[in-house]
Image 1 (cartoon, rainbow, N blue to C red):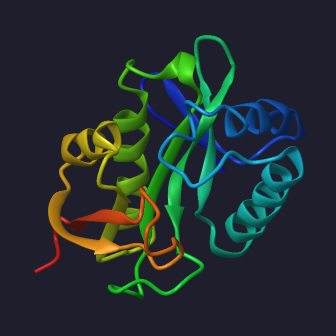
Image 2 (tube, one colour):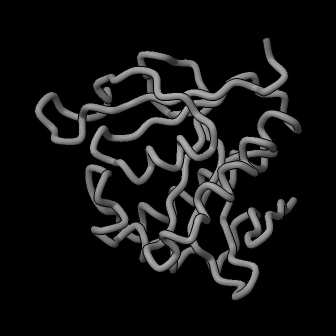
Length: 178
């Protein structure tokens, strides 16, 4: 299953996505708001897990392709966090795009499509997003796609004195919920 926006395709992962995905995960600038960069093995493991979730649920973190070039640019999609959060259980929206594709409006364009899929096709009632308090670019995307800033929390997977431990939660409800 593929989903189209004006400039992007959200789709299942291809073998050819693995190398550019590993490269973006190894880029310290792309991974600035994560605890560390990822190895090729870690990136491949993530793709395997994401593909399995998409196969089982019909939704997940889709590979994103730029229509004009056919180039893999990263991922955008929906996910169930694999660890307990202060506000669990939740479905989160997330994105990670390679640096050459930043600043083009691709993250909000694809994220709006992912929200639409979650709400309209899969009947989700609420979707959240969270990021390190310092990650203002992602917070801007959350605001552009209509999410509401809610509360700060300490990320349970990060050590007490880790500089990225403090996070911010955003939420959005199905437009027809209520």
